[in-house]
Image (tube, rainbow, N blue to C red):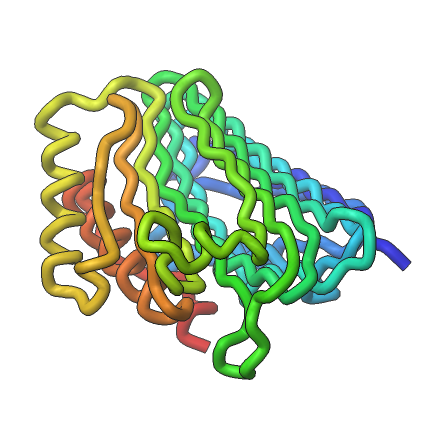
Length: 280
């Protein structure tokens, strides 16, 4: 049996109360849910956890996730665990995410890692459309195989697609049998976790803000154990990207969370209030 599930999550700024509040509404079809909205930082920022009860995808499964962030709203989305792409005999397992952000909105897209099992056939696609004045902090973390369980990624194909239309497009396929990619010095060099953190805007960044973002990321990386396999660049005047290679997920996620906190502080003048689900 295959699952076809969809979710529409909408953030809006409710200005009817004394203190403006971001509220979340969602509709779903199939096994996708949004848990109760939380406000650990006050009414302005709405934290939500996206749940896929089956826990993973097999060939033929499709998850279609759409998020809209209204004018001046601020949402934060994470997940309680990894998105698992299991072994597939034939069909692709597909996750598609589409985010549309209005002027002045902010979104933090912080799902836990995608986990590519041996023999998977998977497509993981995310597209973020930002109106002028919108700002996004997001990440994409992918791990190949289960090193802790001695289950390496020896066969399989994982297709990755990250896009901000007209601004930034990264598309690739990680084939487990491609030795040059998996183990070569110009590829993943034997690492099995690939992670990208990005700060993106709907309006070109000033040189000052770009340098603030890059400097904040580099200060964190210089003090981290992954400093030799991490880097920060600005591939477009609307995007800052941090890229990390690691042997396993945990150190990569640790580095990304530290940079995320630094960016919140330096770019948005916010604290590093992490989602509660990360502590459970």
